[in-house]
Image (tube, rainbow, N blue to C red; front, side):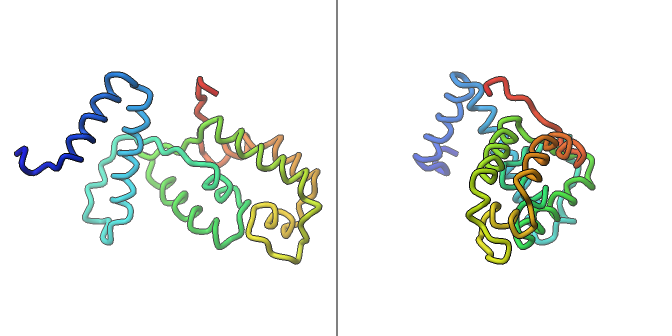
Length: 168
């Protein structure tokens, strides 16, 4: 059986063993990436109905850009595919959508940037950025402040749980 593995395979196996023993937090992250990769592969399968759909409850953590899309802060050509995926995930109660608190902090940081930079954008000039989209939607500085103050509630209203990271 050893003949079937390359030297790189052995390095990868050793890295995983080392991470599990010496850095359990890193191993947990690696494990989540691995499971996410499996789920992604299954969801991208041409005929998903052939897949055994008996998942245990699976936590899915969304990143900042995905959350911006789910909250309609990107242009529609960006947010529509993300929202479609989000709606598919919500249909299956085995998936538990989550976002880390530090992701929300990052979102708030970006939105605070709009408060400082909004004067640089014009409603009728499309700039491929969140700021450009917010300006085209008519957002004022006050709208942004109001959104930031309610961001956690908006996330909860979507059925997304907020995971508190003890390191943040």
